Amino acid sequence: YPPTHQPTCLSCVPRGRLTMSKAKAVLDGCSLTCSQLTKLGGQGASIQIGVDAMAKVVRAREMVDNLVERGFNEGHVAYGINTGFGLFSNIVVENDQLTDLQNNLIRSHCAGIGDPISREQTRRLLALRINVLAKGHSGIRPETLDQMVAAFNADCMSVVPAKGTVGASGDLAPLSHLALGLMGEGPMWDPDTGAIGEAAEILARKGLSPITLQAKEGLAMINGTQLMSSIGADAVTRAENVAMCADIACALSVEALKGTPRSFEPCIHAVRPHQGQVEVAGRLISLLTPLSEMYSSHNYTGQVQDAYSLRCSPQVHGIVHDTIRFVGGVLDVELNSATDNPMVFSGADGFEIVCGDNATLEDQEAARQDWGGVLKKRTSDTFYNAGDGFVISGGNFHGEYPAKVLDYLAIGVSELGNISERRLERLVNPSLSGLPAFLTNEPGLNSGFMIAHCTSAALCSENKVLSHPSSVDTISTSGAKEDHVSMGGFAARKALETVSHVETIVAIEILAACQALENFRPLKTTDALEAVHALVREKVPPLGVDRYMTADIEAVTEIIRSGAIVEAVQPHLALHSHRTAAEMEAEILELRAQLAEKETK
Image (cartoon, rainbow, N blue to C red):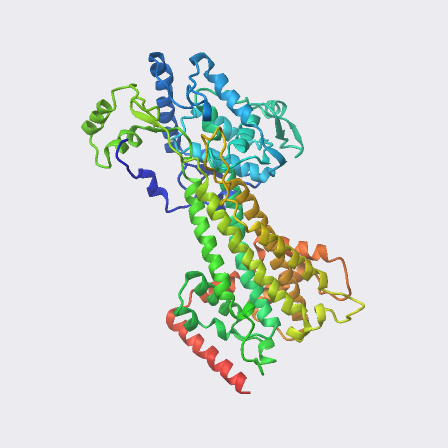
C-alpha cells in the first residue's frame, strides 16, 4: 500500500459556520455541525451543494467512468463497481448488468422493520447523506446528487424504518429505504398532507424524476453511518440544552430548599479544575447571586451542609457537560467524513496522497508508473488505478465511533435525570424540605406532586436500562465477511430516548421547584430565577387543588425543548460571563461577607 498520509480535508475539522446562500444551507462535506444538521430537520429548510464541493464530485465520478468505460473492457475488476457485495464480492458482473446490480442492491437491502423514523429525522438523514457525498470520495454522478438535493428541497422524504441496521457496513437497511423512495419505488411521506403515499406518484406530482442508478451509485447511496450520526446529532444537540436546563433546575431547587451557594465558590473548583465542573459552579453562582430576598429570610440558619444532590451538582453535572462536549466533537467529525467503500481519490486528493504532502508533478507521474500505469490493476483487488487518481477499499463505513460515543451520551445524560429526581424527592418530602407534603396545602384531600415524582422515578429506571451500551455487542453477518459490527443504530435511538426522558425529568423538577417558590411569596428569588418562574407561569398556573398533571408536565417539557428556559436566563449569565477576574474576585469577597454577616445574625 502507498505510504499513509493525512488527507488535506482534516484541515476542516475545526468547524466554522455552515455557509448560507439566499436562505439555503450550502453543504460542502467539511463544515456541518450537529446543531446545524438538527436545524435542517425543520420544515422549510433548503440546501445546495457548494461549487468547490461539486467540482470534487465531478472529478471523483470521472475516476469511476474511467474504470467502467476503459478499464473493464480490458478485464479489470473493482469491488462494488462490477462485482457483487459482501460474500458475493468475488463474483464479477457484466458491464450490461451494472445498472441492475445497483438497483438490486437497494431493493434487496430494504429489509428494515418497525415504525419509521419521523419526517424531521428523515430530512436530517437525507441532508447528512448529501453532505457526505459532497465530500467527493463516493463516485456518485453530479446529476444524481442534484436530484437528491431537489428531493430534499421539495420535502419528498422516503419512509425509513428505524430498525434493521447493525452499524457496519454502515446503516445499510435505513439508507437503502432512503434511496428506494428517491428511485420512485416504495412508500414516501407526502409533503402536502403528511400522510404516507407512493413515491412514484409523489415525485411526479412535485415535478421530480426518479433517480436512475448507474455504476457504483447504489453503493454510494447506502455505505455509511448517517442514520446513527443524524439521530445522534439530534440527541447531542438536545442534550446540550437539557444539561443547561438541569443547571437552572438545580439553582431553583437550592433556593426552594433553603440551600447555600457557598459550595459553588470558585476556590473549591479551581483546585479540581475539570472544565465542566468549573463552568457549572460558575453558572450556579450567577443564577443564585446577588443573594435573594428568599435567602435573606432564612440566612442558612441552623444548617451545616447541603445534601449531595445540591452541594455536588457541579461535580455531577460537570462531567455530563464534558461528556456532551466530547460526543459532539466526535460527531462533528463524523458528519463531515467520507464513509463509503470503495473510496475514490482524484487529482490532488489522489496521487498526492500516494506520494506525500510535498509531491511534485514528476513524483505523481512516477507514482502512476509505479502503480502500473493508467488503468492497470495491481495484484490486490483493493486498489485500482483510474487515471488521474485511484479507487481503494477500506473500512470507513464502520460505525464504532458514533456507536461508542452515543453509548457514552446515554450514560452521561441519564445521570442528570438521577440527580434531578433526588432533588425532586427533597422538594416533595416534608421531612427533608420543611415544605408542605408533595407541595400541596390541603394534604389528604389533594395529592399534589405525589405521582409526578413517581413519573420521574419511572423514567430514571428506564434510563438505567437504556444506558446499557449496545456497542459492546457484535454479531457476525454477511457470511462472516462482516464479522464485527457496531450496533450504532440502536446506540443512537436509545441515546435520543434517554435525552427525551431527561427533558421530562428536569421539567418535573422545574415545575415542582416553581411550586415550592409559591410558599415564600411575596419574597422573591434572584432575577434570573424569577425570569424562569415567570416563563413557567405563562404556561402553568400554581397548583391549588389537584388537576390533570400530564398537561402541566408536557407544557414545561416543551418549554425546555424550545430553548426558552436557557434563553430566559441568558442575559443574567452573559452579565456575569463578561466580568474581569478582578471584578469576579471582588464579587466573591462581597458574597462571602454577605454570607458571613447573615450566618452571624
